[in-house]
Image (cartoon, rainbow, N blue to C red; front, side, top):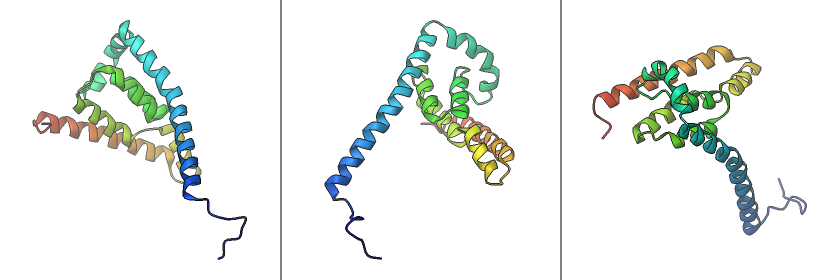
Length: 154
């Protein structure tokens, strides 16, 4: 297949310029979404709202050795996306191990509504696969808690 004049491949400087501009637009879009969430969570934390509502979630999150406040991040990851979850986790003063544990669990079970819908539209059983992702995230959380209990965390 021969490239015609109309279909010329852009030069490297042109491609770099397009990549840099598109990259900055992506950063800006994420920044407008993540920064307000971070500020809201930080304010809620400052006024004790996160701790009081997190106390309700403590029994469930305690199953994974995590504080109750992390439930907000899991809800954001499941319903919105991982960027929202990161914005919520950032001001919570978690240990590196807890952040890793949350990241693994949320990496398995994130954006469940949208991805479940996409799976269903392809003919797959979206609900079953979504339930499997939630179960796998819970198993990963329990395994991470077990590894931490063994003292392997360094």
